[in-house]
Length: 334
Image (cartoon, rainbow, N blue to C red; front, side):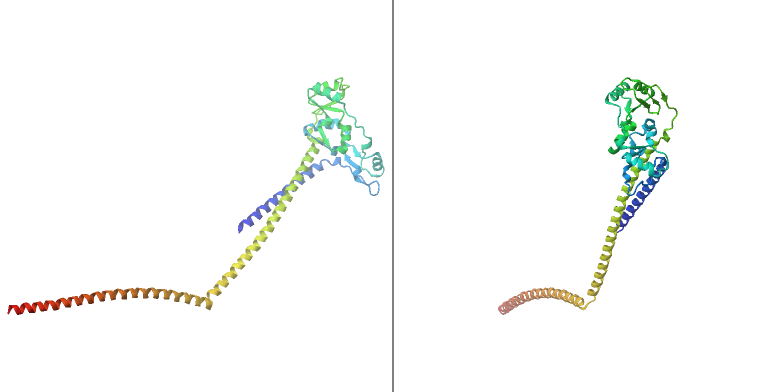
């Protein structure tokens, strides 16, 4: 009977652990989000019943870096474009600038006016050939929703990320490429020969933090799903245990009632009469058996008496004949 209770306790403990995991995951998301408050875009609705989906958000939050090791290079490629705000049309942009009560100066990119040109296939092929696979178009290193794909072309479509400075120099100066190249460490080399860069701390990279935030948000969703499953299973087990306890109580009650009935039957007159009849039947069987044995003894005694009677008669006859013979012998002697 205790197995059900142990199972419920175990499932309840699991539910509590998953809820603890959710709290820990939420704390991590909150901590990482607090480091990225500069990417929040706050505004008031510029008109009644304004559809907020017309505002897509800050470029940096509309994309994900495939490999966090490329975060510094991609930030250099994007530059200030990373903080620009994407909207659906220039009408929305003008409404926000005039009536959105913006807290800081921003550059707004209307999707319907964006320049989505990128390096052409000839440049990409030349860069790959010159770098021997050590250069990638920056655009290929990020992912985004289809809706803002042209934004990413505008931001990342005209530069290559190279594995080192020598590769960046070779690609940037190639006559079939002639476009900006950035090393993985974040040094920028443009076709004019200008090199910019220096010491960078990848730990402070905005895109690296966003990548960590996306991972934390995915972990939070997973923890929530696990917690919901644990809650549902624990609740179902508790219901089953409650139903089983109720059934056990009903069985115990029925067994107790049956015991009382059996006690009453054992003490009733009919039960006592039944026991008397059983005893009489046992006595009758014993008497019958004893009678049969006595009859056999009588028969055996009768047979023995008959044999003795014959034997006595035979002895008497022989005695008489012997007496006569003796008397005759006596007379002859005289």
